[in-house]
Length: 269
Length: 268
Ligand SMILES: Nc1ncnc2c1ncn2[C@@H]1O[C@H](COP(=O)(O)OP(=O)(O)O)[C@@H](O)[C@H]1O
Ligand SMILES: [Mg+2]
Image (cartoon, rainbow over all chains, first blue to last red; front, side):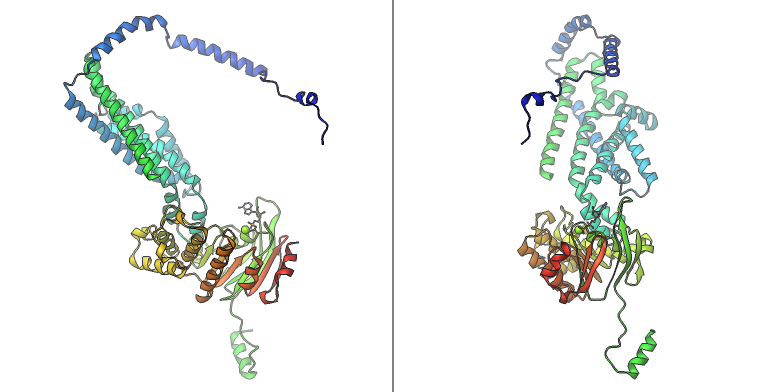
């Protein structure tokens, strides 16, 4: 038995808080100072918030009750929004498969293709969907097609990355077994890797659909189709009760899609 | 000695002792492999495997048994040595030729390595990728009728035809390993490698599966190279026994002359 008293033990007890080093201390001070300046930069102002309160109150009372006048038009716009989300996600997922495979270590046919597809996926992800929408509006004109293309890019950035991760994590045993019996590269991918990663693919695709549904709502603001444009027009024309209808419709769509995808996910996995 | 000379002598002196030896199915010589520039796990491993012969390979954990097997079809690239499979030098083959050669080699792993979410039938049909590529071998629903029937026949050989539609991850360990054997048979192999094929099964399932496996190998007149920690299996199911220890092949003898007790000393 070792001879240790509590006294000698507590000598080695770590102190409750680490004292920051000099560099760390300076970085903290600079960080806090920048945050204070940023409050100024963001024009945070309590008085503006207070004077704005009556405006908000008026707007809310104008919104209630929501106006059913343009319910049919809103319904169609909502349908178009969801169609954009669905088609954009579907094509995005299809495109993500080859890009995902190329971006997976061990499956990619060449290092050049690996880096290229990683770069494409990273770019699709880092450019915001509204920027993609602006770009495609210029390229293919106003309307839902531009929005759908934006959603394809958005989905590629999201799914390409997660598909590649899922395939990298797939158990290596079945793949080795197929390699050992002389299967081609595509044979092992389609019969061992993709089946193993399938639950993850489905899961990711459903998340992508939910994400696309939320994005497709705002794409209309830049004229890329969907219900966003209806909302903008109503707001610009101070038709707040109509705007309220649209907001509720959007809310309903997003909730329905999220619920449906959650239910589907439970059944698949 | 040339074949002609052999015939000549055989004609003159009619003794059964003079026969031309069959060329081995597998001839390994001077094989060495190390990992990550470390010391070689083994070196100078040489052995032959005659057609229809069954050879077992024993040795302590980490001796490199699995690595030897994997090197033989270049699942792991060997560092040195020559491996001749069916009279073809494996190490100098290009990708396509290597695939063609691998197709003739059944490989049964310690873990069954089935694709979990797919059906048993699909997993067996995968064995046909040895000779055919394309979607027809990816999934049983897309497979041509003859492949489906052949796969069902292979499943019948291992006694699992009635489980063809079940998902592979809903099988017991013994059943999974039998499906893996059926998949190897679906390749129509000439030789089969098995790396501790029943080590992950309980003793009774292990006996059953090993017996069935070796029986199928014999019935199809295939050559077999297997590793095992079960010394009874290693002796009973082989014609010859190899022992790998401390990086060298230290034992190469007919199995009939071995007994479990003296082999135990090999692990000391
Ligand atoms: N892919 C690998 N990378 C690095 N080391 C490996 C690899 N495969 C096997 N080894 C090492 O080689 C040695 C032999 O392994 P293995 O062939 O599995 O032994 P055995 O099958 O006889 O138990 C072990 O020390 C193991 O750690
Ligand atoms: Mg091993």
